[in-house]
Length: 168
Image (cartoon, rainbow, N blue to C red; front, side, top):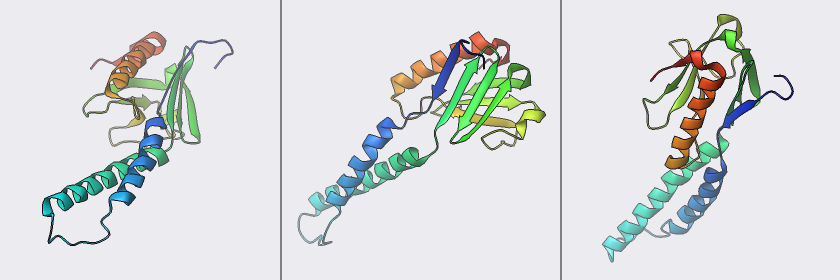
């Protein structure tokens, strides 16, 4: 990357999960029943137990997102940089075989195919088809922000390495 070169940077966010995780954990601890006597007020106790279980599920999912390493992708005119946790790889556009935005699931991912010379240094594990899932688009953001993030990412890929984007 050259100084002064235009850069488009996209990363995952932990802010929302970092707020939700302790709140849901605290609610779970408060709602845990101290006695399991269902002889009276069965409907009320079942509702509280359901809320307790729901808080537990939300807390576990949020803590997983908080503890997962940060993923980032930076696009420049000379190439792309993939970062996952502390590991990073900078590859020129000539080493990038294909970039695709995989939208098969509810949460889209940036999927990259690399030249075999750079593949050994990739910060994420290789999938069975030879690709690398580099960045979950909009992780930790609302649905509206995820859609905006997807549009900006697609525009950046087309602007910096347009011939590498696989049309969806």
